[in-house]
Image 1 (cartoon, one colour):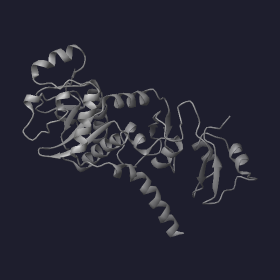
Image 2: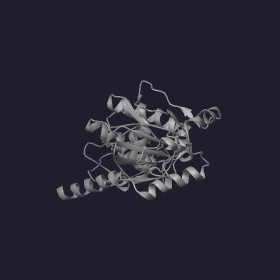
Image 3: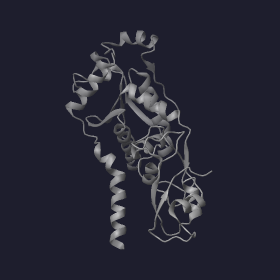
Image 4: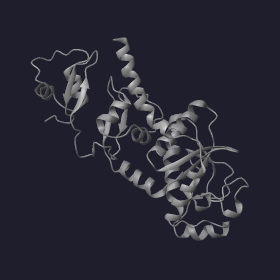
Length: 301
């Protein structure tokens, strides 16, 4: 029994970290080239000098980024960025401050080509206004949160993040159209899930038909810790189960755990005791640990 429990825990742990392992903070020439290609495909202007900025601001292609209660700009010469980059900073800085109790520090935004540092790549996207540099937090907990959140977003295909060594910072290139579409799906979703006893983040993601990376990203969660009563936003981006805010999840298999009851399980999956009993041909409400139940979430009348 002990070995079986360990095996189950190992499977759950592997599922929860697989997304993070798929992405790394190590940059490459290929990633820089990919960023550049996307900027070109999107028709972005690569600003040659600061004199070109006012015209791009007037046309709405660039927006000014200002300090606020969640964000600090440290020695940023040209505080302008593409609208999607500003949107990312507004959302990320608010989540970061809630998670860490400190402001997010931005160290660079738009950099004209004639102001690029000597070690910058020739095809850097900073002149296109689609990149931002973030200071690496001193506190380990905050550093871990920021890295895992950025990696989760990278896993969703909306940005590319690299931890640069000289000077130390995170370079974040935002893929503007995918990111704006991503946020639109999140804000258009009104689904909310309240964490119950025995829930895990992995199980909630599986039940609701979204990826672990998506669930972490929309809720600003870097690890797997959740609390009873916590309200989680469920993104409208569905995984291969194709779940949307207006549909229910297909039938799932649930393994009974110690302390479970039919009433608790029914409440967790928004169904009824009678429905679970019918689906599983149960003659009584007595359950056994490790018993497998077929459940259709959201089937309560």
